[in-house]
Length: 292
Ligand SMILES: Nc1ncnc2c1ncn2[C@@H]1O[C@H](COP(=O)(O)OP(=O)(O)O)[C@@H](O)[C@H]1O
Image 1: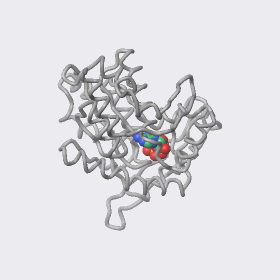
Image 2: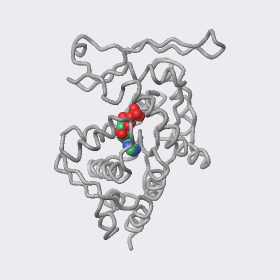
Image 3: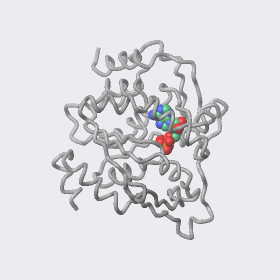
């Protein structure tokens, strides 16, 4: 059996079968099939068969952190700086569910309630995204929003090797304010934040100052709020993070791959600090890019 097919069988053993199915954008997902013909059903097989850990030259990093911490913002900036793709699981899921098919609506409901989608679905979507990237000549990645559960970690571990896991941290009251301040332009998709955060300092803790990131006039009348950015749902997502995602942190910490990073301010203040923090982990060919 080829290595990728062996990885397939192991992945199936991790995730198990399921009866979910949905259809959108011409992509059919039938997790029920997973119980059979492991090698053919392996979602990562096509991706893995065209690459191998030993031959890869580019970095494979993960960004972890609670909702609102700025994973998407910093992961996308870093990916652009280092010339690797930024793969944001939440964006992939939202894109996939943007067409309201009956079974997609059930998943959308889960998402809008702040719940995680079934592993089989996110694994299949991720595999599809990796395959498309490989076909387009992509190398390496910064993954954001995956893995979020121990079983997702185990699935990822079976198919590839992660070099570094950046764990962004921020106090909870600020996370809530940041999520509630998020706005997205329905025209161009740019993210803004209307929250004006200035806390701490006088209570003994460090001051955290994050001025709003306001839209230009061209976007100002097209701002939308994510359905899962209401206070109740944000609190539910934070609780879920503590339950499901903390074990993911623990796993990578035990492997010596976790780098904690405290976000203490807005983008202009945080970005250079983040670049400094990751520099020791950059492959040689990326060092000059990060220094520029
Ligand atoms: N790895 C994953 N496993 C299961 N569900 C996911 C995963 N990534 C994203 N989702 C779904 O998409 C939603 C939005 O994800 P994301 O944009 O990353 O949110 P957040 O800002 O909460 O980190 C999640 O609440 C969940 O429903």
